[in-house]
Image (cartoon, one colour):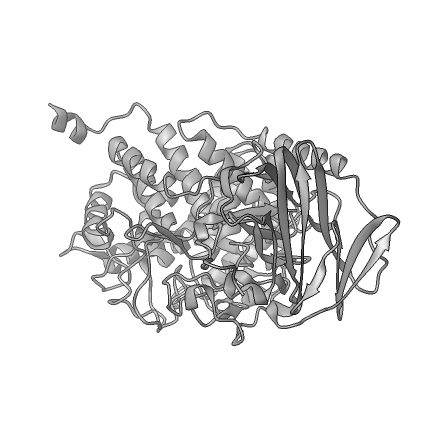
Length: 610
């Protein structure tokens, strides 16, 4: 049961911990409510995020119901979380982190006494298998130190810290911390057939973890007005990356709703080619050449094989089977069901994906990274796949579950794929049928202008022959199909503003009630789309509009600098999976665009001031 007076935690009140293999979400009240060991896409052992504490959680907080959080923050440029608590009897500092670089699946919680004496409460409910499996729990001593061991099938958890007692299928207890005292707790996962992991030197592990994150963040190249937000966004992208494979998950969570109480609940703990390509680009721009190569290598390994088997997403190691199923035993976040694991969109054809991959790899070449005997032949194979499906409709970037259509954005990204191929031969001396690819590219351009641009509306449209707007059209100038300040793009932006901006100035992906996406209508604005609009403003001379919107969007991050997928500005709450890589990618691009355009003023704005 939830504690007296406690309600489901707002998404914005969560912090992310990461060990570069998986991530934990810990609430402002000190409860680890989401954790999957040993990988992001493993089954959860703490699943209260999608239900109640009975589905698993680990609480460490002052037992005083009136205790308040004075401050909560990451140690600068890290994912080491510190929460300063104050009670009537004293103050404590709780430091939460996951060790990095030792391949040890753990969460460490250090409680330090600052003033007075504080009673700290601990509640541990372990539920393997997404909240369904109650483990066998035993307690013993390791020398003079108590340990708790929980085992269920292949999974084992070991807790080192103050002794707990059993109470209704959970374990709980209290301990006192006075000024100067330090109490360390470590919860470590390991395969149950192996020996128990040895105890750690917590001081040493904490220092090495802080050093890792700070050293990584110090490589960031950015001195713009939004440098702090950009650095945190880049850190988030790193935190969502698997250390061994280089795969980046879209988010560490599943089924946080795009509309509260609705069915738009998806599993984002997988690696989208689109996200990987955009991440590669962001890393190159900000000085992370080694990481960019890691992502390129993951991407190339994942898509290796018969090009006809190309998928839009893969598992962290390149796994292809991501079968979607529903977990009926979980009530969902804010009663939003179904809770899903796996993702049925894996079987969709999305024509834009090859274009995004080719654009990212073209930019990598532009940064001086040479192709090898594996990467360029594989790109040629991807171009062959695109050519084989040249005239087919698709599901589009938003993974529409309705009928297949010719989405304008998808067709433009296919154009971009062949444009990159032409430039690879022309500018970089790679081998390929340049004239043939030029013919395909130019044919696509003519087709898009005939069917994807509505002359009566004077705007590009969501689908061929349609009248609806789509935020993905903002990506057309990003890949060079049109200039940002092209009159056709300006008029498209005007229609997007008229039809997709909500009353709070945030951009919807598309009008769900007017589009056939196979689901009931309704969702909140997608933050990445609004960041695209910032980029459009910045690169078309509307700097003031761009900065105004950018400030609004950055303001939607929580105090730790984390962004969700969507935002409900009316009720001031985050929505969708969290933290969301796509949102942070959008922030980085928008900040870069504002920095490039700094000092540039459009003639329109100049005239307006005159």
